[in-house]
Image (cartoon, rainbow, N blue to C red):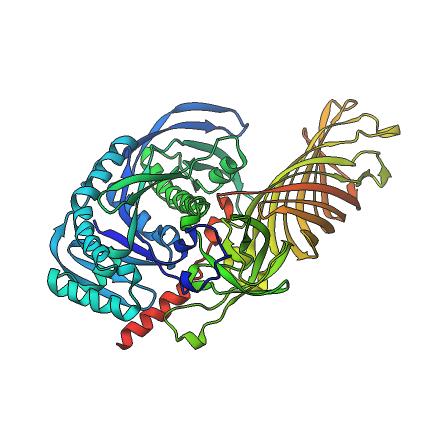
Length: 611
């Protein structure tokens, strides 16, 4: 099992920043500090049991026991490795210790299989509690890593390494490389090192559901199938240790856990599921493949949440002085090398009375090409717009921890009307209570042409008006809808924004016919163009009031006991208000997330092949 070492690499120099930018040393986090990232995922257990529920065609669900699934250490490590770039992105240099060699990956070069004097063993494989894993990992770091760092950093301190210029540092490292037999590139990383990351996965708590469903072939033949689904959120934890010059000590814990009934918990479960449909009744052996798919999706979402929560701490957030402060084109010297995305929020900070204070915030609409693998004259800054507050040159811009995904809570009214046999029934007007998700496509895909474009979908539960006059025998027993929509936001001023978009949705209404002693079920498809005015209280909270016009495209009505009804849902005005709250989990959007720094990595690799 290799051991990863990484160092944040940005183009900014602390010494070049005006003294008024910040009152403390947290700006140094955007410079160069090493992070050891352990590539072994700690596991509480490799064997898990999930309760199984069986639901028949009539919707009757009963528990039918439990099934067992396995997560091997090798599979867990592979999934961690495939998502390591979200946890240790290309804003860091990375070193991989493996046995008696080391590989060093910087923004500009890759050094493979550099020899080490002393072999660094892998962390032994073991399934244990979080506390025991913490103890074992800390002991591993202090037994095998700290001694090498002590030696190198001790010599560096005596030589006043941090005060040297680039040429002096290069000479010092070459001299120490000859003295220790350790490559200069490895020494440079160790001199800068300060933190170690470890990752731990508690026992997965999940459930399996088997639903009996009826399907119809193209020829009209009906048959029974079985839909098996599993949901098992990965509540990954990150352990962060700081090296104080002698030993590693616990500095911080970050977890990807959310309360079951919280909005983050709902989003987490949305990315933690997988399903398969079979013609046969599945068994325990069929659950493993479904679990493997669910785990990969859920673990990726947990790494996105960990990354966002880690960046809440200034030592791990990218910061840069403002180069130009025009509100519509604020220039920042960070970009794709640091994984800055389209619509990425940044806060602007200034020292006032010897205290750093937030004075405004904005959004990047054009990320810069800051790849360090290309010549300096070809690099470009990022451009951001001021959303609220103020900003001046030499203020500090700090990335805001964000996933680009919000939960939406709202209430809306559809002033539509149900006609039966071309007669007005008085029924149809409905008030919906809505819960949904909203994802910024520009941010998720890092595409400037999608800046301000949001993909929304949600579920609404509603109460409809009863029938009137000759249709007073129709009593509403509720309504439900599912909608999918696009929304384009345009920032106006001081947090205000305009919204223009449309929803495509399906709505189902149910009425008790007290004369026929039956239930009338109405299903309608429709499109709703709409416009609105909203306000951002902060990058994480916004409110929107909207108005639209609902156009039903098709309507189908029939009694539960059988019998079609000639019915139409008439168009009508819709009014709504919603509150959107930022989520640490990308939920159903996790699979859309891209890495801006991939472009820099590809350029670096092409350059390496030419050496």
